[in-house]
Image 1 (cartoon, rainbow, N blue to C red):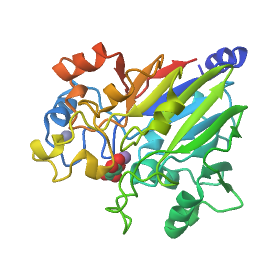
Image 2: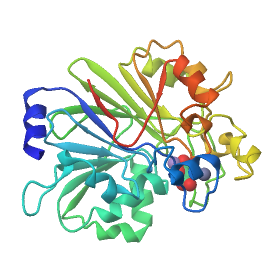
Image 3: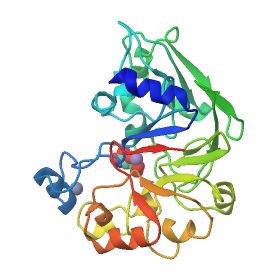
Image 4: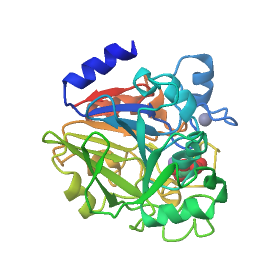
Length: 310
Ligand code: MLT
Ligand code: MN
Ligand code: ZN
């Protein structure tokens, strides 16, 4: 099976993107949550979603992960392309980080055991990892840590052109400054632009608001995978799940005049997919009004196992 898929990938030079996880921090069902979506996932009427991470490749052989969710081992088990083809080997040759929150980085602790890869992140995100000494398990002679500069293109394994860029965001939840500078743009919350064979796609799993610069950058894209954490800004508060608004969490909502559906509606983006979707979001319910509204606006709801070829 692995060989068949490899052969197909090798003949085309298409950009392949695999959604390993489409959920927000906590996933669905979340371990301690009895909300409608989490209960329906437990009952089998809504698909489970692990925490957000994607794999990308242009040759079907050499793969890069964007973010590395806590569920990475289970995520890899579902994807034949990402299985070893030798006694000690992995098709994953790089991991690129878009943030320092647990849902982006915790899976790195499972990608140890001595197989080399390149860990790419901004200087600030590398500092975050360096300050958490448990990540020293990724020994420097095995896992090369490469600093990327926002706005400076680089090449991922297989020849995929990538550029990171600042996105309005927030420091990781466990950091002392996590309540400060929400919505600031820098090296904390990152988007990724991928270019291949004339196609241009964006991965933006966390975003506090769509700035003019961000709108200009993603205008005319072939595909945008975008922060789908919440439907409404006060959804966690209204459901009694948390005291935090979306704005406080550094995530804009899907709906509303300032929401992502409105903000991206006039940017001529060919395909729009929500990712990093929180279990509180009613758009996860297949027959909800929110799902219908989102689909009528031209959006898709990402799911674990979703495949996109461009
Ligand atoms: C977030 O996206 O705000 C975080 O993933 C929250 C969390 O880690 O629980
Ligand atoms: Mn998150
Ligand atoms: Zn829930």
